[in-house]
Image 1 (cartoon, helix red, strand yellow):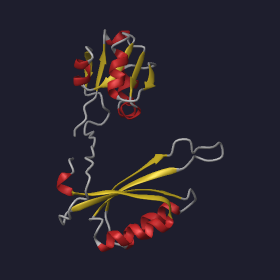
Image 2 (tube, helix red, strand yellow):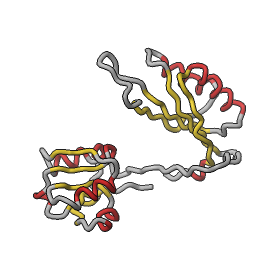
Image 3 (cartoon, rainbow, N blue to C red):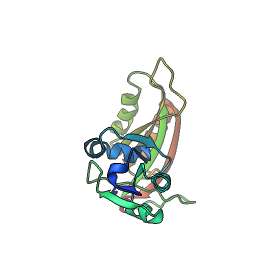
Length: 197
């Protein structure tokens, strides 16, 4: 779904001393904030809805959220479309109780952790290449609490690839990847037609 961020508040933009939102939204609007609200403190919230609720309690707090969140919390829309990239989208997952049927045009999502050492990610990615599998998305997420002073911590990698998890080449790739992983989970398979954006 297309994401459109707004700056919300109780009073005028000039009254805002802090801007709050979820970390992703703050990051997605960082250039706009630097240009239009230089020096204003940014504070992470658990969600855009929580940010709007905080802004509804204090005229010195602005929230980055949707216009709908603003209406729900009685806030004014002080600026629209403040995201730095106007082709921003977000994806939602629908969780089912049974595996998706094979359609012939599917994607499979896996999440894994590999040893935190040089070349381990390249070795993992080479598995998909050897099996002729196209990755359509890869993203890393730091594992909370895994950082120490001597290193940058451990990471979970999320990979989306073309193919159904029951296909032989996808199964073989996942089996090979499992041998290189500290942990691995197949998140699921879904028809490409179900993917928005």
